Length: 431
Length: 101
Image (tube, rainbow over all chains, first blue to last red; front, side):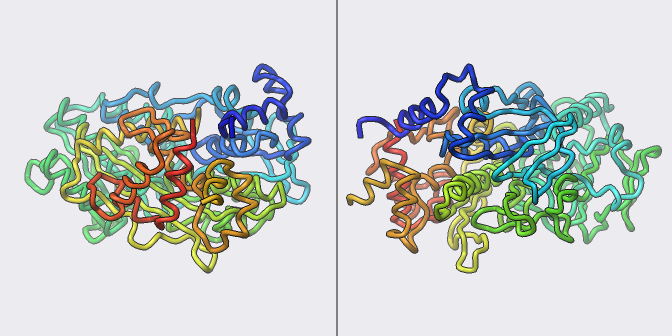
């Protein structure tokens, strides 16, 4: 026991690759002859973590990550950009470290097809990649058909900002250009959707910006749901910071029972409509209903719900053996569709992929989700849960664990931990 | 004791070999340790105000986690998380982080 585990892995890696990281482009192919060939589609929290941890567990496996973009702007933290607490640069990452530190091969291309029988992935650029096991982590797409007057083109003027990047920048610009005394409408999505506390943290962060720069303005949330994630904590924070429930409230929430079930956007008139509410606004952020990203559907990985059914222990698709689906696209409830959950699922999937390639038993899985939200710069709240595989092979909450911040939990400490959480989860995923 | 040490030291490979012996047991220290990384950093090396766990004394880590689990110590989120693990799992993850250099 004179060498540490890390050194051991590094030595193994060096032996397997036969060269330093300078030859990373060649190395995976050489290593692949030993440990097998894994292709990963999608470089978000699920895909990037899976790539890193498969290599960490077994450096003899060749891992190729296919991602359309050269950089990734994280959805976590994107609300903080709207609140003036971080810049887009702070939340944008490259895949360089996955290459240099972990020997992952990155292919910047768009996947056009998956052939589950031939075990190949076709790329828009014309190449075809073979795999022994495939990990699909494509994220979400929108159900434009469920909202009248809203589609990808309208989203260029009325942003969803539910995929971080140019959409976040557009919403930020509109908030900055808005006059004082204006109304910002957030049209929240129905369940299930990416990042359950997200719309409410967004309302908080926009209110934080308005409070400082445009104090006569307000945020109105139209919500098709009758309740939402961390509701008591958010409403408590809104009362403390933004006059919630008073005639000076900077945040107003219109839930399902008050007619929040919005169905139509009028882009010309700048208004959002439900059966009972017509809301005119100066800035509209409309977050439509969601489903697994298109590639999951075209590859036959989705069921009637529009999401991907998977085995709880391995995240292997129930529809196509040899293909694992992780992250927001998978049906993994009670795990939420969050970046932390995707990161946790990716590690369970990594254990499964490595074990299945070796032909040994898949070890007992375990998951955690921890999500922080900022209500204000020094006001943080959290929800956490530990998950286990139940006797019937499903994912379940560990009884007695988890829950939300207590009434006496320090909001200041949790705000500090929220920022630390962000720095660690992105490092754990992309570096 | 020997099995525990072996599990702690050699990580994944040995865990797999040892799996049949540990039938019905919880997740390995390494598998649990991976789930901590989102807040405490890869290999327990934190980039921010959340404490690092890497290379900490196993007995101390175990005691801290047991104190959170039994609410003897009041943290923010850790009381809620520590309740998700058996005493054996807590010992295993404490051993895992203590071995990381």
